Image (cartoon, rainbow, N blue to C red; front, side):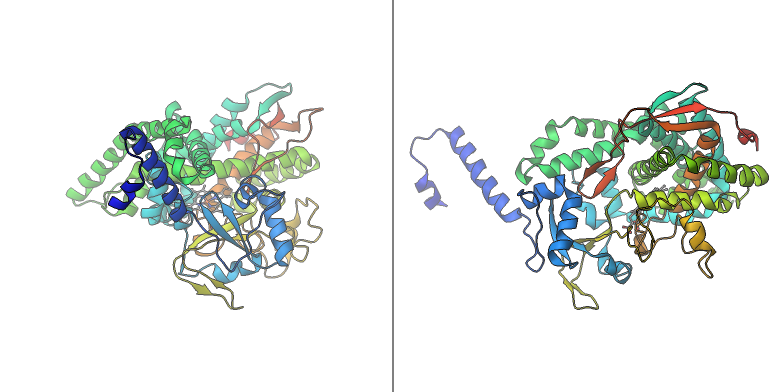
Length: 510
Ligand code: HEM
């Protein structure tokens, strides 16, 4: 130590010494924490940029280039938080249930879980069962029970958001659908009171975007200046306020439920039946004192923007292929008109189901899925070794002509036809995952909320298609998506037009 001080010029002010020491420590820290690429996998970059910038700004091009360069072999990309190994789609089935692969840890470093505001992400990492089991064991088992709530809230919300005008009005469609989905989902997540609470709806709508944007911007910054970036970026203050406000609203609800359950137990009675995720989460926690606010924010994050994106793309596809709308309306009038909102109605909307799957195939939310963290080195059946500590993802295969003949064509009935083949009835539903359909992931961690999302989108679309005509804004170019890393998103300023129409059936009173 004394030897180091011998290099420091005599008489240097202490403040300068401190600054110097900080810079030196930063360089040493960056050197040791720099995420190095894995030696056995080619690292891909494009357009003469570094690998990190290439991935952040031209993710899709990097994936195309990677497979071209390696002739379809695995390669790696450099994300803002280290390398990620990209596997070709053929590995999807083989890795889907491997116990060596961890789902939540794949996102730990992407979301800075130790910073205030990222509690929901931390919750997913430390108690991932809470969300998964609440959705899988409670919500999905209660889909029949919650249909009425979904329908009631959709009726009010769609009218509130899109109005009664019989002339064409221009809508910023992503924002509008986000409001609809936030309200309809919150009805089932938090009950009738909070689902219309303006502050909760703002949180439900902004929390995901703020946390993803903040994490993205922090990933762009070199590791050493991330703490400063966190302090100055406005998203972090908004995120912390959202968490505080969510506490104020949700904690009293949790206490109410806890009191009701405790009172019933004390009286030797069965706890009251609940039909919202807050109550279900409390059940799943089995007395463990978990952070239910983070749990709700986590649920909101998993559910609302994904569902909004899918509904939005479906509507854009209706504008792009206007001949579809009459076919979909005919089915709604026939099935919903005949059966109302019976338990099997949504299952019987087979053209709508096929349409949603085709929409997701042609415009997926991301060009890869199945993000996992490798906890223990694995060797796959063809000898491919994936090292412990690596993060991996599998590339989607939505344009494979062997699975999807004429893959460039939008065929609204593609999956109705597939389901009519012998033994294929259940293999091609919107919610069925497979290596060639990774929009909901695949295997043990495939999205447990997809059954709920499917019902919710169908109910919302039934109302929007019967009550309104839809079209692109005349003379405006077709809205292009926004691409970053591997995500493909509808631009927030995307506009289309709506016009109220006469309904064929009284869909509000079935
Ligand atoms: C169309 C809408 C949705 C899409 C496209 C979607 C997509 C996904 C994807 C790609 C995954 C990762 C799967 C994997 O890597 O294998 C996932 C996981 C998850 N999703 Fe969804 N999701 C949607 C809606 C929902 C909804 C509505 C909920 C809750 C009600 C939900 C809850 C979850 C949960 C809890 C996980 C984590 C599963 C685990 O920990 O094993 N999702 N989702």
